[in-house]
Amino acid sequence: MGRWEALVAIAVVAVFLAASAGKVDAAKAAAKGKYRALFNFGDSLADVGNLLIANGVPDNLTTARLPYGQTYLGKPTGRCSDGRLVIDHLAQEFGLSLLPPSKANHSDFKHGANFAITGATALDTPYFEARGLGAVVWNSGALMTQIQWFRDLKPSFCNSTKEECKEFYANSLFVVGEFGGNDYNAPLFAGKGLTEAYKFMPDVIQGISDGVEELIAEGAADLIVPGVMPTGCFPVYLNMLDMPAHEYGSRSGCIRQYNTFSWVHNAHLKRALEKLRLKYPNVRIIYGDYYTPVVQFILQPEKFDGS
Image 1: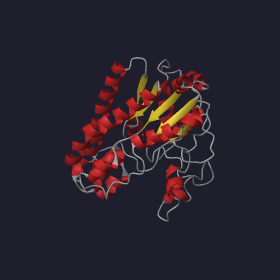
Image 2: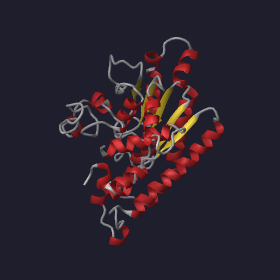
Image 3: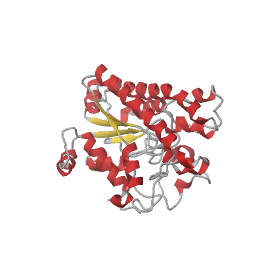
């Protein structure tokens, strides 16, 4: 089992609240046929081709060239991976076909669609422009924009009565995120540091919460909302920052204060989701933990066929 396959195994178990440790096989078997469709919203962690379709193939877009896509699909598709993404594994675990990018014309969307696009943020572009970060953020489809794409595509999912659409969505799974990473990249890439990035956090969390509520209003009844991964382990920050030795984890080599930042975001997100659960008791909202598995991969790569 590869690294991302291990992450998916964890995510799938989380989806099935009735599944306990030692019952993974039973949970995976129960997954087949559980949902009629899967809808995904997110950024480069889940983009399966929307950026390529929307913007063509610029020379500097590496995901449009090999080795991206070579180990599973045999060609580049716009995925930021040489194989499948987490959302691809989830679709297959539920017995569904790989989700088509929402911008792919003439696609079959009867089992859902993927609205994720590289560079997406929780907050809209004007938010960053108002803070002098318009030139830094690369936002081709913020969360609310993706939700509007979802609404625009509704006739492809259900083209009859409002009640039929509600029933269809109630039997679908909605994955909302991860969102937030690119929002924080804007001030951090601009050299403003964590102090400034922390100021964005309440608005980012509120933006995610608002997006979840919009989807609930559309009829979503089962949602997974992932948190962010440990930013301090990202190669881009490890290469960009020159920190004192004590700022790095002795085992992981990750930047402690940046990982703490990600942990704080996730803690606030979990609180926001708990408020939504109380507000919508008939809706199942599950927090998706992307943070812990990544740390586990780094600390014990041998357990995941890594080295």
